[in-house]
Length: 202
Image (cartoon, rainbow, N blue to C red):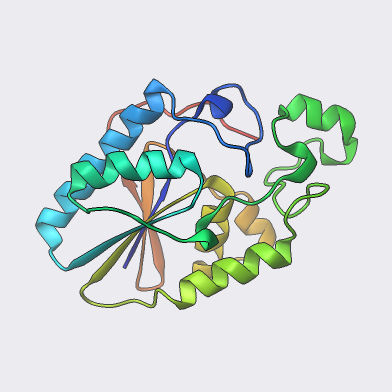
């Protein structure tokens, strides 16, 4: 059983910029989202029991999220796993979507540009590390893994789990006020709390 969580809103999210491996702290809304996720997980943990483990991408925004979520849900310190890191966006990182579209018109209107960005991580590299992570987290009746990751990596993890095509994977939702449960071959959205989502990202 995997609870797959995206970090809360960051400053670069708020500015509409590609992040990738560039880091940015959570905004006040992002902190509130993290707190809401932590409270919801605490409810699930109290109701479900079992062995819970918290894993996190090495980037600062996910580690900040994990600190808040782990403290509220009583999960203890997070184990860092580099396979949960966000897709590298190469030359896109730090740019807004209009800036990207102006420099690379071939990307205009495309959703889910991970694996395509000049100088970024290839789709093969993204699939290799996410497949490896999923293979190490086979389902168990008692083990619950809480994984805090990112928009693009989270899409790929869910797409692999569901057996989706790459194009179906590219358009999966990436909420910051909800998270996903991966169990028994299905993915279920779990609402964290009555918080507004930020505007859609590139």
